[in-house]
Image (cartoon, rainbow, N blue to C red; front, top):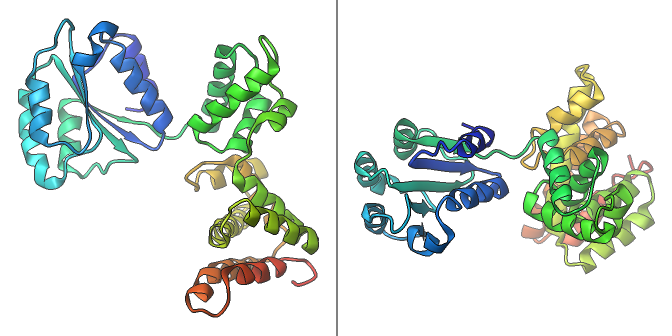
Length: 333
């Protein structure tokens, strides 16, 4: 099941006694764990909630066998899945586990459904996937959070929040709190408010620098590169980021050439990235029209070569990066 179905069941009081939580959306997963913990009386939580990290599985089983104290249930959270050599013991124990012990396995990232323990939990309990929120879900989440913080925010501003912060909800919540405090009680968080308050994702600076080179403003681009490096960005990280951007440009160009409309192409392109960032996808599509397929392939190779040339001792990574960026100028193509 997905996280939406899980929260519906939790709200209705339909809790299972065995779960596997997995997926990339750690923020929503942490909220699910918080709500499960809240089903235990606050005064009894310390003695009825146990979290295991790198402990022996015998200790996990012992915790499950211990009866709850002044509570309907004991909650046992395992922050890892058992390795295959340990899985047999856990799988054999699951049918014997007392119903009063709620056992939750947590996996950061998607768990393979081929794992024997995955299959056992799916058969005897529930597997819940916490996938990254879709754009409309993230927008609604941000608007709700703003209301809870005593302010208001429309959908356009919510989208801009994620353009500035990226898709990480923990970071977005922290930056939104700053904007709500700035707007004041019952104030409105607008695009201008966010621009004044939010700490921009470092990727924004790289986008701005790239735009200078693509527009032929080489001197401005080099100054922007100097600023990024002075702020602690590494040439290799910038080159790696740009490699990813030019891959997106190449894919985006193919999507548009296939006849797909711009908005559909943005969504399709964003879906190919881990962060599902529509801002990055839109920028890639806009920039792709400035290049031929051959030029995009050449630029992609140039940024990939930054690391190789440094390893081979041919050039410093910064010098190679500068050459690759300068080659993007319309005058050089």
